Length: 245
Image (cartoon, rainbow, N blue to C red; front, side, top):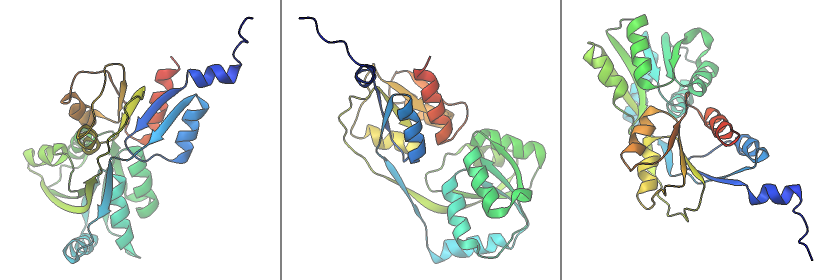
């Protein structure tokens, strides 16, 4: 007797793409991918914690009193500063990395305070130098930030007043690595993942940007798809475009 033909949903299930995200994702993005037959398992390999010390709080309070160019390279930094803002409206020109960081900063400080945005820290540093020619800036950052932005600015004579407002904590996991692909959003998550895991040659690796890609390239030779814009929504869009080619 001939085997019964597979129904459409059975074929889709059989060919489902299985991916692992090494960072938290909004439920809506996971659902968008699922609608395209892409199943994403979310398992964060890093977490962030605000630095709630009296010294850091004092530095933030002092920054609110200054007329300054201010840089945010992550949403985490914006959130920490926003939690201390209260009714203060500082005299800042704000530059951000990524659309989501810019959107959050806009919602907290207002559109008139946003001076510019770029896809990565190095490009943002060049933009600041081109538009402002500053003597100094305030940089709200995490303790594991990359060196690109402060190095470029300092080489051009800009004093970078850096205020570390959050920690990045690695959360390594050992996973059964039978996924078709992996999603990485930061160099810290790359290091955390590779502490107990490896990548096999059949997997496709998705990276949120050039600094994360550079960290991945140090771990071996495998296919890396680097997003043209940073952000989780942009990453999932890139993933769906890749698998729907």
